[in-house]
Amino acid sequence: MDDQPSIPLKDESISIPEITISENKLGEFPWWFVGLILIAIWASFFIFSKENYREAFLFIIVGIKFTIVTSLTAYVIATILGLFAGLGRISRNVVINNLATLYIELIRGIPMLVLIFFIAFVGVPIAVDFLNKIGVLLLSLGLTSTGKFLTNLHNQAIAMNVRAIIALAVTYGAFLAEIFRAGIQSIGKGQMEASRSLGMSYKQAMQFVILPQAIRNVLPALGNDFVAMVKDSSLVSVLAVRDITQVARLYAGRSFRFREAYVTLTVLYLIMTLALSMLVRYIEKRLRKNERT
Image 1: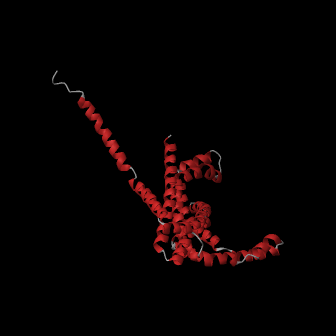
Image 2: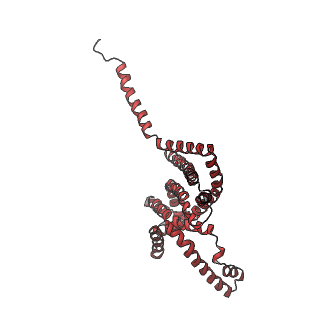
Image 3: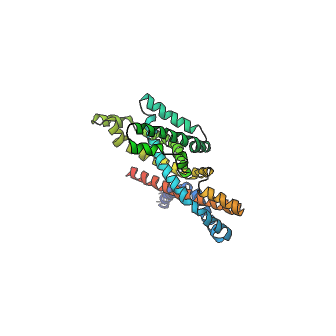
């Protein structure tokens, strides 16, 4: 009877994995993200508790509407450009494939700030001249309404806000194209073969079978790129558009309170990116949960 193993020994062997699991969960918890949130909360409290910082905040916050509208509009256009360019990259048509590759490699090989200047001051005027010539052609064909509209279009009529949106959209379209290409190529070839065997055309198979799965796979990456665009939208301040970066520069130049201006600007961008990052993480978790079920 004394040589028989005791029951507590079995309980001890069960409790060891439980401790290991809890330690793993604590180790995997994103403490760095909590730290960022605490920093943002502390900085926000600091801004609203100091009169100079509160004044800077009320002045700079006016530009946040332009920043959000610019980022959203540019991203929608960039998504459309990126989708078509990504489809062009995997196209078997030699002309379409090479044009898409040329666009992507050209944009990705030039710094974004240089592209913003080029598109705003060179690309847009060239496009306006081209549209004027098309307008003349349409007038000669008897299409007076559209022809007059295009011929009366002037370079000065294109506001800097619109040029900023075009510059961001064209730039990010190249980056999103590679995301879409990778997402489409991640779908097994058997999906396309099965769709074609069911009588679908290539276009139908791509539209109803391949693209929905590809977009689902790359959705987190698309969300991360939108967060990056919100941050990179600060570059359009070089065009003197009134985003929060430009408004902060104006406030600093007028009041000489550079610390208040740029601390407030930093906190505003941090809050925006944190909120968007949390949204992207939530969507990613929901997608993973749906995949498990």
